Length: 462
Image (tube, rainbow, N blue to C red; front, side, top):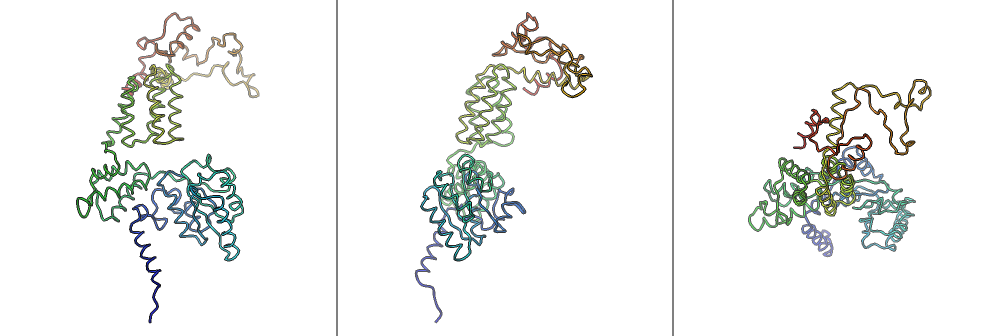
């Protein structure tokens, strides 16, 4: 009689099969090979460093750092399937120092008895406190354990320097639209469903680079479509319901139109309009870094020296976008919008630069005056370099009247302060130095306001 498996094995296999079929879509779609991983080509493309180490089974301790849903756990499981080493998994959320020591002892026994190394995958490694990381350090340092740590937090802040210095850091980037679209198409095929194009694009846009979130949303949308038709056809309404957000029309034209309205609202000092367009862009999935860059530009283009603090506020918001990320950084962007919209306005920075560049293009360059030339190298003094230069700090007022431009350009005026904000003080100071009795220029005077460079600037601002 042919031998058969014990009933307990059959039940275990059946249970495992049922769990697999009931697993979330993201788990069922988890790649089985490196070639199936999407969106991380710089690390896993042919010949790239992480792929080469995994395929050669020569991986030393690594930290996988990236936002949620970018493939950190997937990579760890692929490593488990390709390595000849034993693979042990812990979560830093619930693991203790005792657990770490038990893993280390097991690795020591395994190495002595079977000459087999051990890989420890530690998910959420940033959740380990200093004592737990210190307990892990000797085993990583000696090579007893090959650590594969995964974290969504900046490891330079959250991982002990000794442990980080013994690991190679690989940063996983948020998935691009094409990668998310590929995942969704695979999910549709597995679920035996189709999807309307606008519904697919809505899920792609709202994924924010998170593949797991995209697939979870798709699974809900397919379940909703199942209630209506067989085979299921996912509509935009299904996608909106799955995400809990309404799809906003935001194509290429909308992108440029909305950001134009955003900039012009802030330039026009309408705080509420600026906040509305900011919210519209954020809700539509606009790149927060793009918004931040536009605010930094606006701080000099439309506010300038009328309120120099505006550039610092805009720059701080841009840094917050990188350091904090969404959704929290939307508060920093909103603060910057309120500050910039309420600040006094001046376009004199961009006008001044335009006038100066027009002179550089259209007029003779002229020579650097001798008294301004570098006099530090040997022989410079014999050429007359630096001769006659007056050091401003030697004057009690901190300023001396001397020529700072080529003779051909003396008297050309580029920067004319406006009557707004801090520029009133700048105009007064300049007038005191030059004995000018006229007040700040309102932009309608002669100066160089009608140069081609300034006209071009004004045209850009319209």
